Length: 273
Ligand code: MF3
Ligand code: CO
Ligand code: CO
Image (cartoon, rainbow, N blue to C red; front, side, top):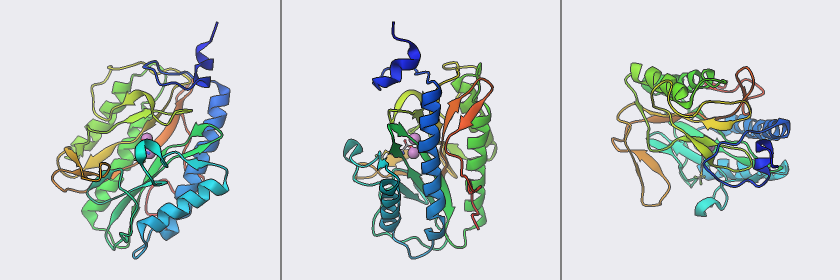
């Protein structure tokens, strides 16, 4: 009989939520650590005048050097090694010749695939002098993600995570994006369950040790509504208000959760210097 813990060997996408064992935790620890190292390494380069494509090149080189491949490269036709989302771009910003500018707030999202495991994480970067409203959005978004992660423990439900994020963001009169969500992660980049960032407590699947998923709230100063540009990827706020996002990959343990993508040097949120 096949145990549920072995189910990830085949790595097929089903609606069942996989329960991973010690090998999964070990694999995610390595992939998550590499993802965090990469976000640490680009921090000094996130400065005015730098092309986002140059950042993407650095990210790809770092992954290849460490024996990983960018999971986004060739993913549904995507041709870059990261997503770089500036200001009113909610997510899936495409690296380009666009240079970073004083006052920009920028999300960089990376997913190295290392030894069969995906470490998916993103952080915000502040470019030069950033206005107080934008900085507050970034702070609240980080705090919202961490409040969600605090709810990630056995016996709680996915709705408890969603509610923690939504209630905190809305208390600050921000809009929580509904069009994109977190996801199961592991041998697959995007697996069950869908991890929504707005919802009611006590609803949704119950959390169990061995579940791996991302928490990656996107929060807007204005309305939650998004639209995708002609390029088929770039998601922007409909009202062009600023948007921020952080993402961690986590695993549910007996007592709470392990964050696989924490910065080893404490650069989890800006300012980084
Ligand atoms: N890393 C993103 C996530 O958090 C997915 C990016 S898919 C891409 O799920 F193709 F746009 F890169
Ligand atoms: Co993700
Ligand atoms: Co991501």
